[in-house]
Length: 249
Image (tube, rainbow, N blue to C red; front, side, top):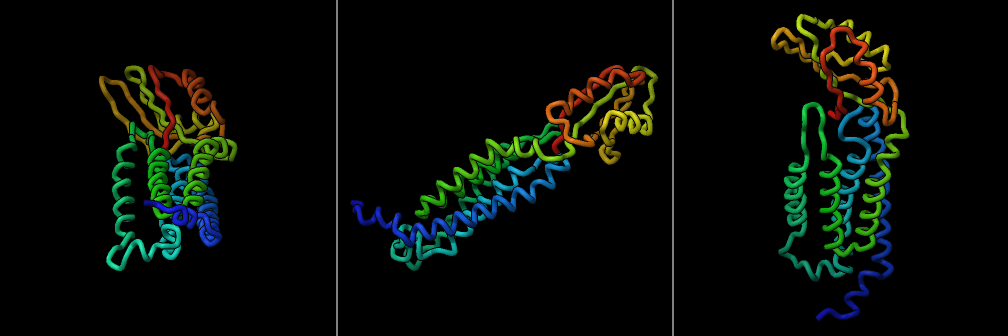
Protein backbone atom coordinates (compact mmCIF):
# COMPACT_ATOMS: atom_id res chain seq x y z
CA UNK A 1 0.00 0.00 0.00
CA UNK A 2 1.47 3.34 -1.08
CA UNK A 3 0.84 6.15 1.33
CA UNK A 4 0.35 9.78 0.31
CA UNK A 5 3.31 10.78 2.42
CA UNK A 6 5.59 8.53 0.36
CA UNK A 7 4.43 10.15 -2.87
CA UNK A 8 4.82 13.67 -1.52
CA UNK A 9 8.45 12.99 -0.67
CA UNK A 10 9.26 13.20 -4.40
CA UNK A 11 8.16 16.83 -4.44
CA UNK A 12 9.79 18.17 -1.28
CA UNK A 13 12.07 21.21 -1.38
CA UNK A 14 15.21 19.08 -1.20
CA UNK A 15 13.99 16.98 -4.14
CA UNK A 16 13.26 20.12 -6.17
CA UNK A 17 16.76 21.38 -5.43
CA UNK A 18 18.27 18.07 -6.51
CA UNK A 19 16.22 18.02 -9.72
CA UNK A 20 17.18 21.60 -10.54
CA UNK A 21 20.83 20.69 -10.02
CA UNK A 22 20.43 17.80 -12.45
CA UNK A 23 18.67 20.13 -14.90
CA UNK A 24 21.60 22.55 -14.81
CA UNK A 25 23.93 19.68 -15.64
CA UNK A 26 21.69 18.57 -18.51
CA UNK A 27 21.49 22.03 -20.05
CA UNK A 28 25.25 22.49 -19.76
CA UNK A 29 25.86 19.09 -21.32
CA UNK A 30 23.46 19.89 -24.17
CA UNK A 31 25.24 23.17 -24.93
CA UNK A 32 28.66 21.52 -24.87
CA UNK A 33 27.38 18.72 -27.10
CA UNK A 34 26.06 21.28 -29.60
CA UNK A 35 29.42 23.04 -29.69
CA UNK A 36 31.31 19.78 -30.15
CA UNK A 37 28.88 18.47 -32.75
CA UNK A 38 29.02 21.66 -34.80
CA UNK A 39 32.55 20.83 -35.89
CA UNK A 40 31.27 17.53 -37.29
CA UNK A 41 28.27 19.21 -38.92
CA UNK A 42 30.53 21.85 -40.48
CA UNK A 43 32.50 19.11 -42.22
CA UNK A 44 29.43 17.16 -43.36
CA UNK A 45 29.81 14.21 -41.01
CA UNK A 46 26.98 11.90 -40.00
CA UNK A 47 27.19 12.47 -36.25
CA UNK A 48 26.26 16.15 -36.04
CA UNK A 49 25.04 18.61 -33.45
CA UNK A 50 21.87 16.75 -32.46
CA UNK A 51 23.64 13.41 -32.10
CA UNK A 52 26.41 14.82 -29.92
CA UNK A 53 24.03 16.82 -27.75
CA UNK A 54 21.70 13.84 -27.22
CA UNK A 55 24.56 11.55 -26.25
CA UNK A 56 26.13 14.17 -24.01
CA UNK A 57 22.88 14.91 -22.17
CA UNK A 58 22.00 11.24 -21.81
CA UNK A 59 25.43 10.44 -20.38
CA UNK A 60 25.12 13.30 -17.95
CA UNK A 61 21.66 12.19 -16.91
CA UNK A 62 22.92 8.70 -16.07
CA UNK A 63 26.04 9.82 -14.23
CA UNK A 64 24.85 12.85 -12.28
CA UNK A 65 22.23 10.91 -10.36
CA UNK A 66 24.94 8.65 -8.95
CA UNK A 67 26.26 11.66 -7.04
CA UNK A 68 22.95 12.13 -5.22
CA UNK A 69 22.21 8.74 -3.62
CA UNK A 70 20.64 10.41 -0.59
CA UNK A 71 17.90 11.75 -2.88
CA UNK A 72 17.06 8.47 -4.61
CA UNK A 73 13.46 7.31 -4.37
CA UNK A 74 12.22 10.46 -2.69
CA UNK A 75 15.07 10.67 -0.19
CA UNK A 76 14.63 7.11 1.05
CA UNK A 77 17.27 5.56 -1.16
CA UNK A 78 19.41 4.08 1.60
CA UNK A 79 16.43 2.49 3.30
CA UNK A 80 14.95 1.09 0.08
CA UNK A 81 18.15 -0.11 -1.57
CA UNK A 82 19.75 -1.76 1.41
CA UNK A 83 23.44 -2.44 1.99
CA UNK A 84 23.72 -5.43 -0.40
CA UNK A 85 22.12 -3.92 -3.52
CA UNK A 86 24.16 -1.88 -6.01
CA UNK A 87 21.82 -0.01 -8.40
CA UNK A 88 24.76 1.17 -10.51
CA UNK A 89 25.11 -2.38 -11.85
CA UNK A 90 21.52 -2.27 -13.00
CA UNK A 91 22.12 1.08 -14.68
CA UNK A 92 25.20 -0.32 -16.40
CA UNK A 93 23.19 -3.26 -17.71
CA UNK A 94 20.42 -1.01 -19.01
CA UNK A 95 22.82 1.32 -20.82
CA UNK A 96 24.79 -1.58 -22.30
CA UNK A 97 21.67 -3.36 -23.49
CA UNK A 98 20.27 -0.22 -25.11
CA UNK A 99 23.63 0.22 -26.85
CA UNK A 100 23.09 -3.04 -28.73
CA UNK A 101 19.59 -1.94 -29.68
CA UNK A 102 20.91 1.38 -30.97
CA UNK A 103 23.47 -0.38 -33.16
CA UNK A 104 20.62 -2.08 -34.99
CA UNK A 105 19.08 1.17 -36.25
CA UNK A 106 22.28 2.51 -37.80
CA UNK A 107 22.30 1.79 -41.52
CA UNK A 108 24.97 2.37 -44.15
CA UNK A 109 24.37 2.59 -47.86
CA UNK A 110 27.49 3.37 -49.81
CA UNK A 111 28.89 6.59 -48.40
CA UNK A 112 25.67 7.50 -46.64
CA UNK A 113 25.04 6.65 -42.98
CA UNK A 114 21.59 7.02 -41.44
CA UNK A 115 20.03 6.31 -38.08
CA UNK A 116 22.62 7.92 -35.83
CA UNK A 117 20.23 10.48 -34.37
CA UNK A 118 17.63 7.76 -33.86
CA UNK A 119 20.20 5.65 -32.03
CA UNK A 120 21.21 8.60 -29.86
CA UNK A 121 17.59 9.38 -29.05
CA UNK A 122 16.98 5.75 -28.05
CA UNK A 123 19.96 5.90 -25.73
CA UNK A 124 18.65 9.18 -24.35
CA UNK A 125 15.31 7.47 -23.72
CA UNK A 126 17.09 4.87 -21.61
CA UNK A 127 18.66 7.65 -19.55
CA UNK A 128 15.22 9.22 -19.08
CA UNK A 129 13.94 5.88 -17.86
CA UNK A 130 16.80 5.56 -15.38
CA UNK A 131 16.19 9.07 -14.07
CA UNK A 132 12.49 8.39 -13.70
CA UNK A 133 13.11 5.07 -12.01
CA UNK A 134 15.37 6.76 -9.48
CA UNK A 135 12.65 9.25 -8.62
CA UNK A 136 14.03 12.31 -10.42
CA UNK A 137 10.69 13.12 -12.02
CA UNK A 138 11.35 16.75 -12.82
CA UNK A 139 14.80 16.02 -14.24
CA UNK A 140 13.37 13.20 -16.38
CA UNK A 141 10.65 15.50 -17.74
CA UNK A 142 13.24 18.20 -18.40
CA UNK A 143 15.52 15.79 -20.26
CA UNK A 144 12.57 14.60 -22.35
CA UNK A 145 11.67 18.16 -23.33
CA UNK A 146 15.30 19.05 -24.06
CA UNK A 147 15.77 15.99 -26.29
CA UNK A 148 12.44 16.47 -28.08
CA UNK A 149 13.18 20.15 -28.72
CA UNK A 150 16.63 19.30 -30.01
CA UNK A 151 15.31 16.61 -32.33
CA UNK A 152 12.56 18.87 -33.73
CA UNK A 153 14.52 22.10 -34.11
CA UNK A 154 18.14 20.92 -34.21
CA UNK A 155 18.05 20.31 -37.96
CA UNK A 156 16.94 23.90 -38.58
CA UNK A 157 19.74 25.16 -36.39
CA UNK A 158 22.25 23.05 -38.28
CA UNK A 159 20.90 24.26 -41.62
CA UNK A 160 21.12 27.92 -40.64
CA UNK A 161 24.79 27.75 -39.62
CA UNK A 162 27.73 27.86 -42.06
CA UNK A 163 28.79 24.37 -43.12
CA UNK A 164 30.30 22.33 -45.93
CA UNK A 165 27.83 19.53 -46.81
CA UNK A 166 29.35 16.48 -48.48
CA UNK A 167 27.87 14.71 -51.49
CA UNK A 168 28.77 11.35 -53.07
CA UNK A 169 29.17 11.34 -56.85
CA UNK A 170 29.15 8.38 -59.20
CA UNK A 171 30.05 9.03 -62.83
CA UNK A 172 30.03 6.57 -65.73
CA UNK A 173 31.64 7.54 -69.01
CA UNK A 174 30.83 6.49 -72.53
CA UNK A 175 32.88 3.64 -74.06
CA UNK A 176 36.49 4.73 -74.40
CA UNK A 177 36.02 7.91 -72.32
CA UNK A 178 38.82 8.29 -69.78
CA UNK A 179 38.27 10.86 -67.07
CA UNK A 180 41.21 12.75 -65.55
CA UNK A 181 41.37 13.67 -61.88
CA UNK A 182 42.60 17.19 -62.65
CA UNK A 183 39.65 17.60 -65.03
CA UNK A 184 37.12 16.59 -62.35
CA UNK A 185 38.81 18.74 -59.71
CA UNK A 186 38.52 21.78 -61.96
CA UNK A 187 34.95 20.92 -62.95
CA UNK A 188 33.72 20.54 -59.36
CA UNK A 189 35.58 23.68 -58.26
CA UNK A 190 33.81 25.68 -60.97
CA UNK A 191 30.48 24.51 -59.51
CA UNK A 192 31.44 25.55 -55.98
CA UNK A 193 32.52 22.15 -54.62
CA UNK A 194 35.87 20.76 -53.46
CA UNK A 195 37.00 17.36 -54.74
CA UNK A 196 38.13 14.94 -51.98
CA UNK A 197 40.99 12.84 -53.44
CA UNK A 198 41.03 10.42 -50.52
CA UNK A 199 37.52 9.22 -51.36
CA UNK A 200 38.26 8.35 -55.00
CA UNK A 201 37.66 4.88 -56.43
CA UNK A 202 37.84 3.96 -60.13
CA UNK A 203 36.36 0.93 -61.88
CA UNK A 204 36.34 0.00 -65.54
CA UNK A 205 33.74 -2.42 -66.96
CA UNK A 206 33.29 -3.12 -70.69
CA UNK A 207 35.56 -0.21 -71.62
CA UNK A 208 33.45 2.14 -69.47
CA UNK A 209 35.11 4.02 -66.64
CA UNK A 210 33.15 4.52 -63.44
CA UNK A 211 34.42 7.07 -60.93
CA UNK A 212 33.14 7.36 -57.36
CA UNK A 213 34.22 10.21 -55.12
CA UNK A 214 33.06 12.67 -52.48
CA UNK A 215 33.09 16.43 -52.80
CA UNK A 216 32.17 19.07 -50.24
CA UNK A 217 30.25 22.25 -50.94
CA UNK A 218 32.27 25.41 -50.47
CA UNK A 219 29.30 26.84 -48.58
CA UNK A 220 25.88 25.70 -47.43
CA UNK A 221 23.53 25.67 -50.42
CA UNK A 222 20.59 24.58 -48.21
CA UNK A 223 18.16 22.32 -50.13
CA UNK A 224 19.96 22.85 -53.45
CA UNK A 225 23.16 21.03 -52.50
CA UNK A 226 22.38 18.07 -54.77
CA UNK A 227 20.26 19.68 -57.47
CA UNK A 228 22.76 22.49 -57.99
CA UNK A 229 25.53 19.97 -58.67
CA UNK A 230 23.44 17.50 -60.70
CA UNK A 231 22.02 20.17 -63.00
CA UNK A 232 25.50 20.95 -64.31
CA UNK A 233 26.80 17.40 -64.69
CA UNK A 234 25.46 16.97 -68.26
CA UNK A 235 28.01 19.63 -69.27
CA UNK A 236 30.83 17.15 -68.55
CA UNK A 237 32.01 15.76 -71.93
CA UNK A 238 31.63 12.04 -72.50
CA UNK A 239 29.35 11.44 -69.52
CA UNK A 240 26.93 8.53 -70.02
CA UNK A 241 25.21 8.43 -66.62
CA UNK A 242 25.60 9.77 -63.12
CA UNK A 243 24.30 9.43 -59.57
CA UNK A 244 24.50 12.05 -56.83
CA UNK A 245 23.50 11.58 -53.17
CA UNK A 246 24.25 13.01 -49.78
CA UNK A 247 27.44 11.60 -48.22
CA UNK A 248 27.29 11.54 -44.44
CA UNK A 249 30.43 9.79 -43.26
